[in-house]
Image (cartoon, rainbow, N blue to C red):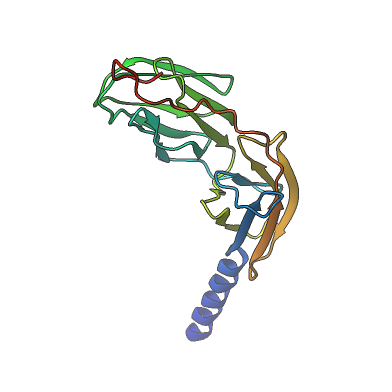
Length: 214
């Protein structure tokens, strides 16, 4: 009788584990001519059930060679983001975005301040000293997210269930959304063809006679 109870308990454990098993989602983002699109952020927001908090989650956006170390960073709301200045010059990192307003004036080499980003939304970063420096933080209300690589590909895993898929890119005219259902025992794929606006980033100039940058 005891052996049967143990077997029943194990069977129940396996069944519960299967019910909450993660399902993999593969994303492909391309342009109209089939070219890969990097830095597209994909997030899955559950339509049923609660979302686990971002307890202890961190990310890092450094300054190096008078550039931000990542053009696009994605974090869950509640995560802490560090801003290490590993450069040889001062910076003045700031954001005027509604989701997070802050500034680090006259930010010296070696400093490593941080902020908690607790409101979902888009945060645009700049530098008041080097106007070509630009970066984005996408704060999402979910732990299930990914960013496409140079090949335009990303993979993420989430528990089986219904989600609202959101796709964002700095050069998209509008957020792409769709409903998706993930199964417990099968992988899903989504292919996106994106029409992007022109890249209007300020390009860093060459060296001037004073050795600086224009």
